[in-house]
Amino acid sequence: MNPVIGKCPICQEELTVTRLHCRSCDTALEGQFALSKLYQLTPEQLQFVELFVRCEGKINRMEQELRMSYPAVRARLSEVINALGYAVGEPETKPVSAETRREILAELSAGHLSVEEAMQLLRGNR
Image (tube, rainbow, N blue to C red; front, side, top):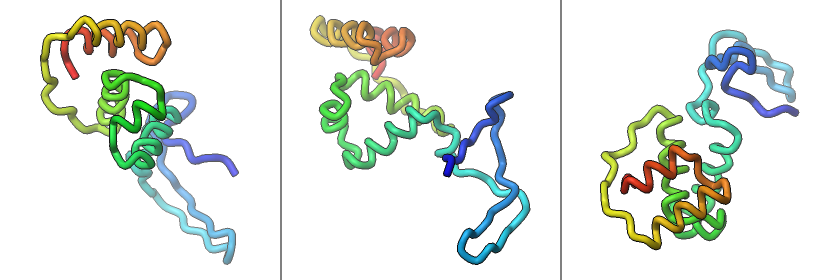
């Protein structure tokens, strides 16, 4: 069975479900059914959410599982929050220590952060 997708592979617009079927009793329902906001996430973002739940929302456990720094995990979480249509709280602007700067640059080099995410973190936005 194929997984349900939430965006059109042609134009990237939101898909709607128009038919539901029960394999057990062969009942079918037709109409317009909305997908959960979770279907708007990319497969990678959905994997992140599943791991977040498995880690009980504990960022330190996420760091260990993903082998990523706190700033990298936080950036991914912010990306998922935005993708679900929610606003991330006002970013904290704090000076970035030399050690944190090295971690961010290492995460960027390893491909764990996008350039935009790294720039935001280097500016002190968490």
